[in-house]
Image (cartoon, rainbow, N blue to C red):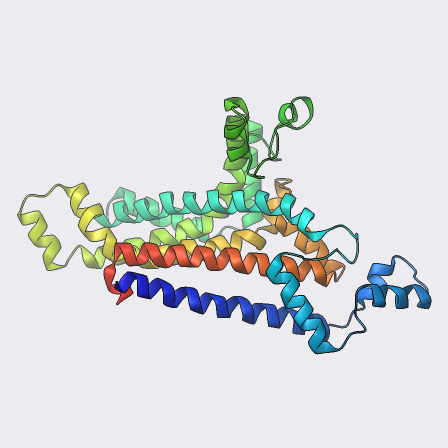
Length: 339
């Protein structure tokens, strides 16, 4: 009962977050000095062309009517057209968003699978070889610039060893010769739905390097947070009693100590998902990953606020959903959170 009430409360707060972001995006679009009508009218437009574009985009309507129309369109997914390219934003997002979501979700899972177990093992062998090695690795993962780490991975695994592809989402075999059907936009899922194990392996191999790059920072932070919390928890009486009863060390570490220590690391891993959605622009550029980050960065440079608004709202919703899942995971691991 407490868990359901906790999740409902978080869901209501999330709705207010989305509404607040929608309002802020609209306000910023009005304050920033730019003319969407001139951008929509094309290069070197005349005054008459700008006026026609202003009426087409309903920019001459009262401010409150424009906000109501803007909020209604955002709520129904009618994001309109890009002022610069005149393409439907919904169609662009259907191409770029799945690519970024696939990268973000995979990197989040990697950060979780690498950072948290490494922190547990480091705390279990505190002061030992693995603890010191993990400490050096976590500091390097946090301190190393993303672009340098990406190029380092490319040099080692793509150029020197030749075991992983350098860039892109799929090989030419599955983009030109026998194109993979786009069903969900997630190559891993589409390859399974198409019954093509070769395409699945190819998509997975292309995903490894960019996902490792994005996951390095949150994995390092999660490792340090988990180690710190586990070190303190392993000194508590119930852990000492569990060892006295003869329970196995893995059961003590992962069954009794980790649920009390995992909450801070889960928060960091969840926040890394939001970073991966739009903050991994350099990673997408280096690995030629056709994702949302590059799409939004180009829109920012051209002040295409219709694209910026749509992408901001979509990212906000994705982040809110991920945050709810993290809250649920925290409440399951530690029931005190729901109280």
